[in-house]
Length: 259
Length: 264
Image (cartoon, rainbow over all chains, first blue to last red; front, side, top):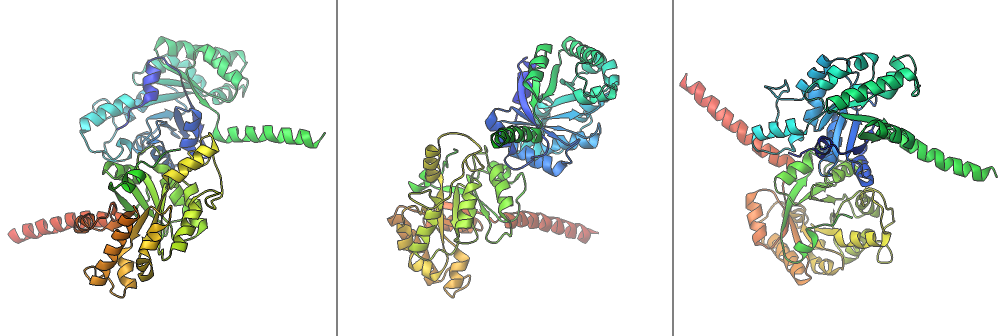
């Protein structure tokens, strides 16, 4: 059973960078992003339409590559969290986490009894079809699993200190767009209320020694959030990376055509 | 580019054993074979009904697992040979090879000019989407590609020595069932004509420093054909192995249940 080098780095206070798999869940995606230096591949199930068959395949494609597969599940539900783990992800991101109770429930879905409520199946995808001691596998599973809470509502900001305090929650991930949306200030990332909310999240994470994470779509965003203390970043969404490269090339071609 | 760790070893007289996949093209299949100790997987396209997209996925699933993927293409055609290499196959098995000219054509399809006729694309699946010098990649791909000609007709068996002589052909693989069929002695694997053909193929390989290859259907075949001199051996077939394990379990259950009913 493989360990999770991303979790080890984060626990040691080191930064990790990866990317968001959204649209192009093809056979080469894992190797393509690995070749660019990505350390994790976060597979979206919330907005992409991808289901467990796809997640299982993408996890298997990561298996030999030293690339950590994570999934964003569509809801805070045992059936999504535990099944994604069984398909082979080394961590789950849960959307719209609003309270410490929800965070506690998410953690419990990722842990076997007595600490949690995860049902057991061994010798399958998540343990690489290996035989061996089940007790060892449970220990490795608990060690390697990353729990990521998406902070994207005013309620979550309200409760952020209690959410950050939950044992087993490893990462607070800023859902920046939804946060502004739910605050009634869509995409106003300079708005004082948004800035204040992020500051509060940063304080809570630092107090409870949790990792701050975010997507990044621009160098400016990366610099700004790095300065705030964010240390885990997912670059892009795959489809937007393709589009921005195309746009840039078409701009050059159009400029040539128009002169 | 990832090398093929078994090619040179087996050409120099070593053995390599792997699995033969015809049915279970699932995401876990390469890892399951690796756990079982396989060094390679021979994926069938001739009889399995699967298309090139399923192959692309299985070839990608082998990445990083230290298991060498080969594909059994359905026919001697550039459009199969070159495309499967582009998707990352580290070797190809071509069925019904009968003449040295045909073998030469197969080798040509696997080689970039000036030695061959393969069209070029780099930075894709076969070179793991990596950058780097194209000349190095061409050298590496020629070194890693294992070319397997299937000998399974009377004419192919007659020409075994000439086929083995073709530079670039690495392995002559006996298609045992078809061979008996084409010899007019279907499934008579003890027939003198069949056994003579087997000896001819092994002798041709030994003479030209090529690898004799075979599909072992069970332990009896495995023992017999290693003894006959075959060195690249696939053990299978995946579906048959599963059925065998399952039927043995079901038989046990039936026997125990019958005994219990008998006691009542």
